[in-house]
Amino acid sequence: MFESLDHIQLQQYWWLVMSIVAGALVFLLFVQGGQTLIDIVGKTENEKSLIITSVGRKWKLTFTTLIVFAAGMFASFPLFYSTSFGGAYYAWKIFLLCFVLQSIAFEYRRKKGNIFGARTYEYFLYLNGFLGTFLLGCVVATFFTGSNFIRDTYNQSEWQTPFYGIEILFNFTNLALGFAILFLSRIMGALYLINNIDNEPIRERSRKQVLWNTLLFLPFFLFFLIRILTMDGYAYDPQTKIVSMEAYKYLHNFLEMPITLVLLGLGVISVLWGIGIAYFKKSRNGFWFTGLGAFLTVLSVFMILGYNNTCFYPSSADLQSSLTIENASSSKFTLTYMSYISLLLPLILWYIYAAWKAIDKHKLSEKDLTEDADEEQIY
Image (cartoon, rainbow, N blue to C red; front, side, top):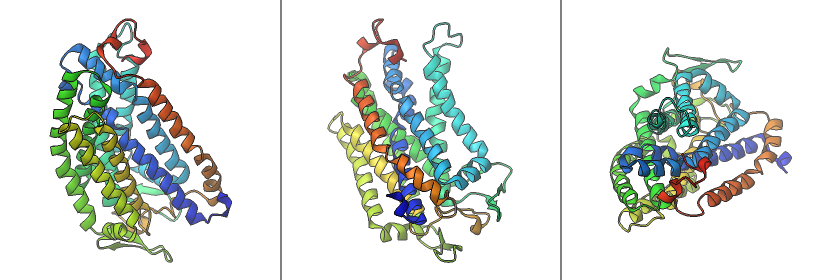
């Protein structure tokens, strides 16, 4: 089946697969968002434990999806992996450290003989929730704004600044997406707590957080969206492979690929609908609408990055060093046989659904924190 596809078709297929995984990852950042609300939404020790347990039961899904995304990019577009992780390694190291600290926190917060105290591990959760989501947004924004690397004829890249990734924080467009992802994760985290916890005070405080974080999210998101629609983008000629700057490139991509514009529209509407019904109608189902909207929006953004002769990892230091799905991908042989493995994706999604359903057999309440509760499910 996949053997009949051309190399470019396989590259396009794998970019779609990775776009789907990226969308799923952003949806699952509600875990990180919920972690930032521990002290704001929880006022008693029991309420804080409820919040930590609620998001803690799902943290492995986010962590696993992050690993799948990294592994998938390594296998399908290895030149991106080596260029970005090898060059911007300070930014990536700090980002990955945030997730390592998260796993440590959930593993040891309630362990007997914990000499550091539960509060220390809660600080780890805060660090992961705030800094991890912010850095992820900043890094993804460089897919539009460019990174400072030069690639030679042997595909060896050299970073052109001594900051090795920290310089992404000097660009306001990068910061805007970083803050947008941070506040979006907090919105989804609050919506998730409303949906998952059977405790009215927590729900009421979470609704207030939905409103405040929406007011913070919208200016950053709108700035980033307007910025990418009006900025010059990195395009390449499909015949000569020469990279050049094209005015309104990303706007052109949306218009020339109507499906991406539809996905973006549906995504934004779904996000706002979920927020609206949660705050104004006090619905507990806003999480699902906003989560779906976040997934569709990210999917559309990644599609305009990789398709329509666009450089998905541009170089601001040397245009011709920019990476595309063509020059950054694995060989046709590798992509072909990896594609058969990708057919397991529906099975993986079914497993996530089944695991989610089993964990959420009933809404979490304070009685789940008693001595008879399953200790492996209480964080």
